[in-house]
Length: 169
Image (cartoon, rainbow, N blue to C red):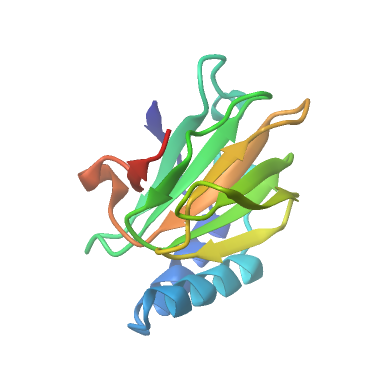
């Protein structure tokens, strides 16, 4: 389920920094790194979501659209993960930057043969930036508290329906 959140001053500063990074017209890897640096400088609190939105859903992780740039160059999405919720193994249609706002996310990285090549627990304040190819992963809340992450994608995810290019399982 996707819902829309209200804009905060934190979010406004972040949008401006993402816009500046995208306007550099770098390749996808460089753009992801620039956007990641902007997120680190303008890291919002979980309050970019309402208290109700921060509860999540017992059925699956829940996405909330925070911003879509008018020219479709990027989208900012907050994802709420209750304990035990996870994605399928997937990759993306474009660059992606993720920052953990609350809790911990467990991420598994895979090669093109779907062999596990790395995993990490991403804690509050940590930022990951990546771009295809080489972005095959799965995210899982393996902890006992709700996690919230901020995802910035180099496309209008409301227009294309998802940032996922393909699922592997």
